[in-house]
Length: 157
Image 1 (tube, one colour):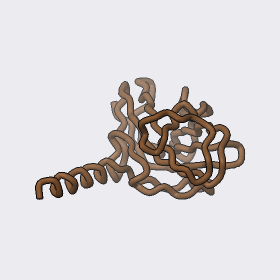
Image 2 (cartoon, one colour):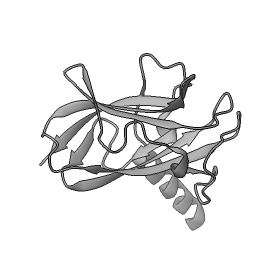
Image 3 (cartoon, one colour):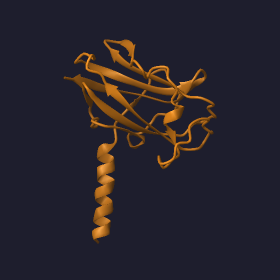
């Protein structure tokens, strides 16, 4: 009986840590569910990102086609103006690709139908303004995305 309660508790904690995301408007990638994306300090409604801290992201990927390389498309959208996150936008995502369990780094290429885990962290720089924004997080190549999502966030002092 105690082990059943423990499993239920772990399941509830993992659901609480999941982040609700919405599909990027122009992406043809499969929409990600809340249990496939976890971002620290991002409850279901809105991410709260404190300046001078670091946030982490974990995302499950299951490409519908092979990807030789992956590039990060990470932007903050403020008043409908996309602003690249310095140091993250346009960089290779391959060093952040792990096996499905998230324990072993596998990098690129990614094979169609296989599940991978993307793990990364990003700094909330002290120069970022305290503002509400939409975070756009895409991973893909010139032919399209393997994953892309957006979610509301607020940068706080």
